[in-house]
Length: 137
Image (tube, rainbow, N blue to C red; front, side, top):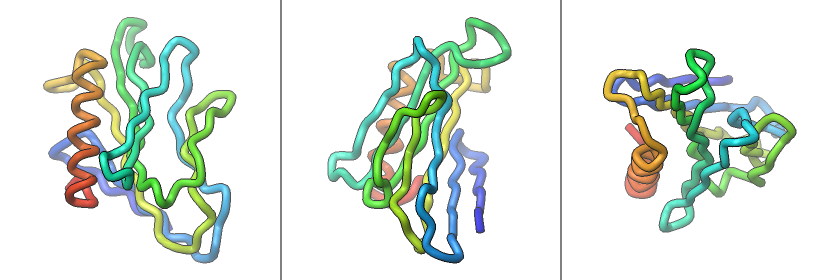
């Protein structure tokens, strides 16, 4: 089972996966661009982390700035790995429910984030919220 929860008050969504039996190889990721570096961080207590990218990576215009991120619980993740076309979050084999958050921030959205610094600040604030509350909403 997969449940997608979209929050209208912010730019993130929560994905919850409930396997019917133990599964290995469960993976999510962000598309990789050669000239856009991966951004990574973990919460102070190490329980939550994120991977992200920010830069010119939209189809709308060659100059548009877009940020993408995945927040994950570190205890559920086997490894972060670079694939040929993606930055990957690979989950540990499990039969338990797995939840993670995805986020996209486009500079042209209402009150859009227009710099990498502001994008990372927004991510770090959300990481702090996850550390304190175990959820974003």
